[in-house]
Length: 420
Ligand code: AOF
Ligand code: ZN
Image 1 (cartoon, rainbow, N blue to C red):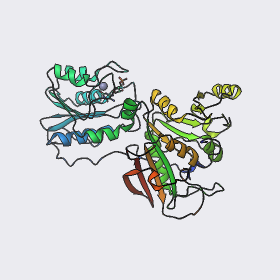
Image 2: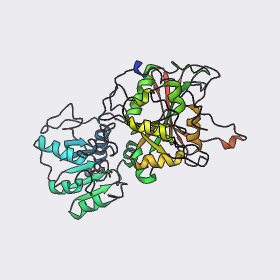
Image 3: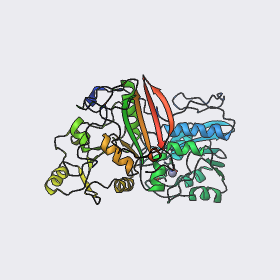
Image 4: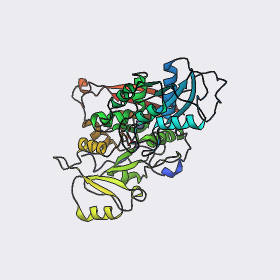
């Protein structure tokens, strides 16, 4: 039911090229630089927030490490966004954050930064927003690098949920005589890597569903007209949220109605998020704009060998995930996306796919833009069935509410006990 006539997703797919706003790629999740005094013996560097600053306590140092972590917002996936600051005698002497996967982790960046500044890290304290890794992955273990560099103390915000690490990094540091603590600003560190934690702990991405509507909840007229409901600031903000996701999911209805590209524009990125299209019957037109760029993953339920071959020849991948009713098995899709190392999944789809995802327990968070206008009847955000009793309603909690230009931005999460 969720794919066939899922028409408009919301108001900002058509003519996507018309809103090319430049966004600071770090504008989500960044924090204000702590008010710190500059020490004399370390040169302050405007491009390197906090270097040379005095930090009086572990908490302030970790807050700075979180700020550094947020600089990796759009570049580290599938690795988590981690920050590391090195403090000696109460002064920040070096810092770094995770680079794109396969390149240096935060700790290595910070050690290199210290070396580049001629700073001696022996006996210093490293503040890291995740336990240093202990495994040989795409890169060698950070725990060994910290031991070799002679750090005196390591403070971590959280233990690494990656089963390849899971406490071993801290244990190795301790075994080498380094004083170790963990758990400082853990909540903030978890929020910054909510997708990585979701994938490691639940095997599926953190799913954030974006929609935009008038104050009375209408996303488009019945004839499909949807430009514009929310303003340019909200649309640009939406691109910043796309940018941090590993993949963007939509449905065939939206592809047919809006012919969107679902790319990130106006934000510098090492690689675009993967586009994922739920298309049970492989109805997609090979000329669709979404198929003209980077490879897409097309999720189908019914094999159509000729179409499958054509899509494959065009560089796309078709993944068959049927459920008992001949539609795409959405929970199985979430697990498949987890296996494919998708940390955060950004959904921009129509009311039917939105509702199917919600009903099948696949959505963690709603990102809703509400315009200060009334439209009246039209297409809604979720084509959910009518309830018989009000106690059947799906409970959410408002996680964050802010104003973006003239519009409201609401981040709402399903309450843990909510029926899904
Ligand atoms: C750290 N510091 O900055 C990050 C860590 O394949 P690799 O070598 O890049 O390792 C990836 C894993 O390392 C990742 O799954 C997570 O467990 C950890 N991430 N660890 O010490 C960092 N990003
Ligand atoms: Zn590491």
